[in-house]
Image 1 (spheres, rainbow, N blue to C red):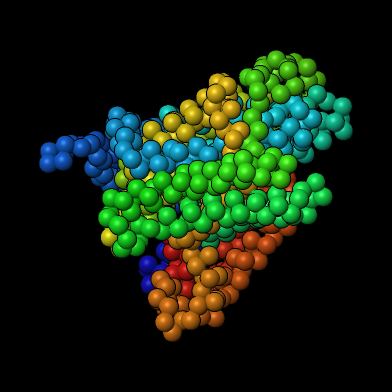
Image 2 (image 1 turned 60 degrees about the vertical axis):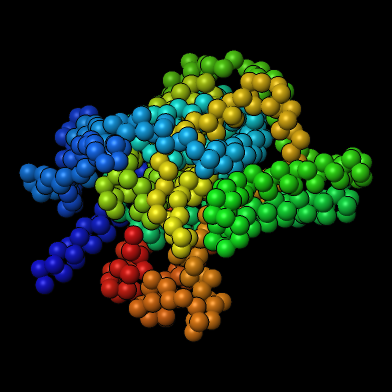
Length: 581
């Protein structure tokens, strides 16, 4: 009875905390962080503090963390901790392993991940760059996006506490910047100075949230939110790729031959990558050959489809088989020819202070995008050990938020796009580095910094040097659409929301029993239907004129989840099984 009472109090505390608007929490943090004790900013929750100490295993001669639990004097870990405590804890746990982060990245599997993620990160950067250029009137374009991706991605991989996270631009960030540009035009304000001041305010709030450990708010998020968000991002990748292929058939400027070739190249890339990736679970060839083909599957798919496109162009001619290819700027410089530094003083004083208002919304957007993705990357199913407390998904978040805050300030001053953790690319990165047992289950992950640094170094080479740019222009865009389809679908296995949706079409009498088998089927279907409804609502908001409010919808998923049990829609026992981390 005492345990049940304690659990009920915990749920009540969570529900009360999540009822607060996330934006208000951030504003409160930024204003009060330096004037009042962190303990007075919020209520606390019960948890254990963990102390990390480096130790040496004489048998394996490898450095690892031995973890000892130490309960705080008051038995509680505060939601907002004292100045810099969370950052110090993250780096204290990770820095002793810094040397191994480089040594552990020197192997074939990491090389395969570098080649795969190079294309997977470059293509969205180029695509988003074009969209940013259209939204901002050329103030921020492809060169700025690719440069930001290369430089910020390298710095993040080098300095973050969770280097397997890949940062990049996202659709919600693009939507926000487009609204900000429209707002600047309406008020006859210069866009880049307004963008810079908004980014500086955002950076300040993010830095305040990092030094006060505000990322602890993410502990109130659960698998319910993670699954919806991950399926959303995966679906966007697949839908955009399929839509792009469909537009080729509908375009009057395209011939049927070109449309058919476009679809063929996308399907070849997707099918080759998917088939070879699954080769690891078959009995064909030797284990070494299976593993290598599986690791290099996406790269082999891209190369195969590119060779087919080249053969078609040589045999049928450019008029019949010429397809649009990856388009990179010819020279290094800003898109509009402007100076790199943004003239901050060109914005009126009142607008500099007024930029705090859109900055609050930008903070909510970047904070949630960053922490939800890192939470997914930190999922215990990937069995990461470096700097990790067993079962804890918050480790590294405070240090990573510090890095994001600093990078946001830098990109704002030089007029580069803000970058944040990119969900699908991050999940694909982790899965590319996962190690599997003979049954195909994850037994560990190669935790290192080499892949992230190398991916963004290669992207930087495309910015600075002509020969890499020329080589990449030989890759047709339909090949990259096939890669996007692979990125989206490869991130879905292991997502229980997706598995329950697929389960609707399975014969349950012969299908393997799922983890939630003890939950009544009616409850499982209701829980899944609610998640699907949330997914549809997020799609609607994203595409609507109020798309800038997208982060608020994400923030409301957590209170909704706790409301399901509070209102008795789903029992506490069933929810504990369905939403178990």
